[in-house]
Amino acid sequence: MKTSSAAVAVPLLDLAAQYRPLRDEILHAMTRVADSQRFILGPEVDGLERELADMLQVAHAVGVSSGTDAIVAVLMALGIGPGDEVITPTHSFIATASSVSRVGATPVFVDIDPVTFNLDPAAVERAVTPRTRAIMPVHLFGLPAELNPLLATARRIGATLIEDAAQAIGATYHGRPVGSIGDVGCFSFFPTKNLGAFGEAGLVTTNDAALARELRLVRDHGAESKYVHARVGGNFRIDAIQAAVLRVKRPHLAAWSEARRRNADRYRTLFDEFGLDRRVETPVETPGCHHIYNQFVIGADDRDQLRAHLTASQIGTEIYYPVPFHRQACFGEPSRGAGPWPAADRAAARSLALPIYGELTEAQQRHVAASLAGFYAAR
Ligand SMILES: *Cc1c(COP(=O)(O)O)cnc(C)c1O
Image (cartoon, rainbow, N blue to C red):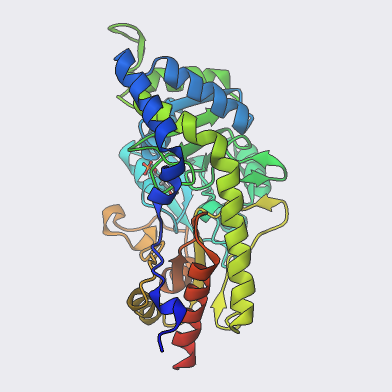
């Protein structure tokens, strides 16, 4: 007899399930842009920026071409470059650190907290030098980083606190949206993020009017007016068609993130039921931090064998991230004094992301739990 769960495939992400009920509205919005023939910046982008500034409780929101470009544009606007150091976690998506290298500055890789996977404030303190110009915590997987001690360090040394909020739109830290707490926030609308565009797009948030003005210049070749350039910038503009799609999706974000939270709870209940609580570590929620579960990342022994077992059960997984920055060839020798990095090395060896998207069914999650239990029962 075939067990019912054996027939349930569980992709890591199912974007079509989210798209289906919004299809007509999204196509209507895209048609609106096509009919207007205004593809770059313009009223759709202005509208999106207003709506996101309101939602994220900031004075200024500047739409840009991607989350990566959000970080690069911020560093350029701040005038960070050769000779400057920017502290980042060593365990994150590559853009967090490579953006620092791209502007000619030095990324300084700091270890994470072993439980939250976010930047360890005490390790940051030890990595500060007279060259530290910015500290860039990442709200990894959607869990807000411990911002208060990082802000205190940044203020004391006169550095800028840049929040890499690419994975955490809508997450809150002691009631305030991430991206509104540091000096500046960077967001991504890459399709796999909780608020995903139909291609590339990003956003910068700040309450600093002068920085916002500089960001608008940097985004558009430093142009104050047509062909008059106040500074060297780039093409970091957001497409109107992406803005139009995002304006349709944005009002649903809170409900989508709540569905992810419900699914995280359901995994915890199922893991209990299957006796998995002693076999795998599940994501934590720290006091005052509202997690939006862009990813649900477990820690497990024999991670690679476990992953192969889940793949054979038609369960999609991913490893975020298998190689920390301090071991990436692209950065060469890591900056002296910033290590060691035991928590990041441990996370790289044990982390496995399970499907967590809002449209997951209970049957699918049960299949994941049963498959995990099957793996450990056999060893
Ligand atoms: C996705 C992501 C980025 C980059 O965003 P893109 O839109 O893909 O360029 C930067 N930092 C983190 C932590 C991310 O997850």
